[in-house]
Image 1 (cartoon, one colour):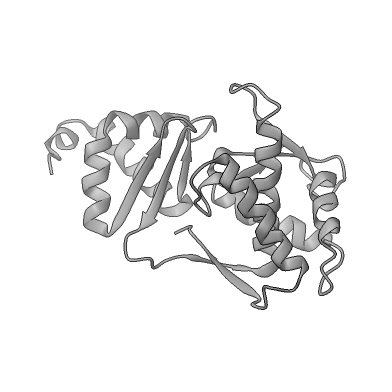
Image 2 (tube, rainbow, N blue to C red):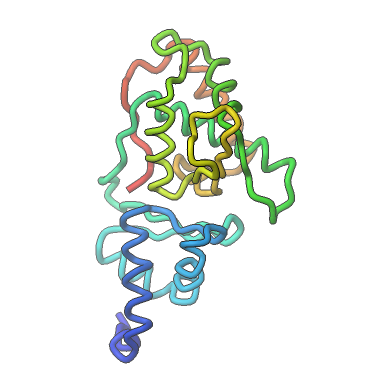
Length: 209
């Protein structure tokens, strides 16, 4: 690996360290996210170095320039985040809302939803084990997804019905699919499985390291 460039420049070495640690800790680097934009650009400029470095660690780095997302996946399939069932449902709802909203917006516009919209989607499922989405579950789940650069809350109290939540395109890669249409269908099918009681497990693996 040609690491000499980083030995010559403390600034370049520090940029590499910061970006690499963000990927390991947060799984996703987002072009449109203010605190990761520079990391995204740096990774693109030094793609070969990052690919080789993470390959040595047993990771695959995926760069989707169309969506402006850098994602990290463990090659051996280990290190996956174990989500509770309700967290999995909310992730699928966020993806569904992202796809629906994205169709109505220009490419430069952010996808923003209201907490009330999440409640509406959740209520439509009529999940017997948990008919209503309580504030603690909602708050904790948004905090979890925020850690992995999937969403961020614009308003401080996410439990308010009019609270705004920005969804990043990384939501499309948390559970990979081929394209937007197939993702839309897959999400609806998955949600229908929950409604019909087809999912009995309390936890579910998600492709986040």
